[in-house]
Length: 198
Image 1: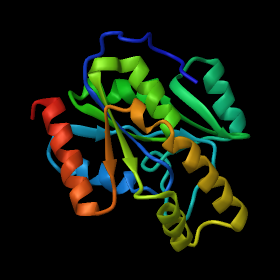
Image 2 (image 1 turned 90 degrees about the vertical axis):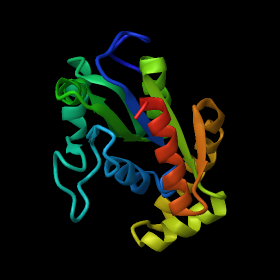
Image 3 (image 1 turned 45 degrees about the vertical axis):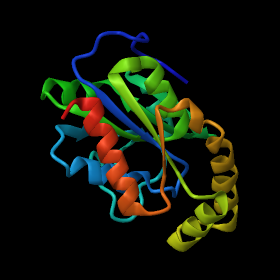
Image 4 (image 1 turned 120 degrees about the vertical axis):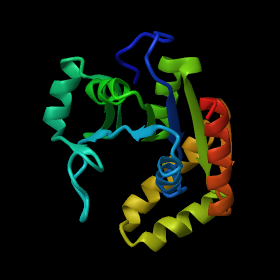
C-alpha cells in the first residue's frame, strides 16, 4: 500500500531498492553494496514483528507494536507500508529517508517485493529497483529450512508467498538470479554503479 510522497516528486537523493522472496539472499547483497564506497546508507525499516536474537532496535529494524505502527500510519509518518501477514506490518518511515538525504547519501532499501514496487512507483527515475531471485522455489525452500528459524507452518507460508512474489519479478528494473553469491554481488554492484554514475 503506497502512502506518502507523490509519484515523481523531486527528492534530493537517489534510492536503491533491493527486493526478493525471503531467503533469496537480498540482505547479503545489500550488505555487500554498502561496503563498496558508493555513498549508500541503509534505510532501516519499521516492523511490528518480534525482535529476533541478536537484532538491535534502530539498526536492524525500528521495532513497533502493531498498535504503534497503526498510530504512525494514521499520523502519515510512512512513505510506504505493507501488512505482510495479519497484524505483521513493515514500512519505510519518512524521517529515515530525510535523515539519509540530509547527510548527502543515497538510500538503499532491503524490502519485500510489494514494498519495493511501491517505492519504485513513488521515486520512479530516482530509484533503481533490483529483484533478487533464487534459482528455484525448491532451492529457496531448502535455504529457509537450513536456517532452522521456521516452523512447518511458517515455512509453508513463506514458500507460498515466495511463489506469488516471483510473479512480480518482471516489474523490476533488473533481475539478479542468486545461484552464485559472488557473481550476484558483482552484478548488483555493476548495476548500482551505472545507475549512480559512480
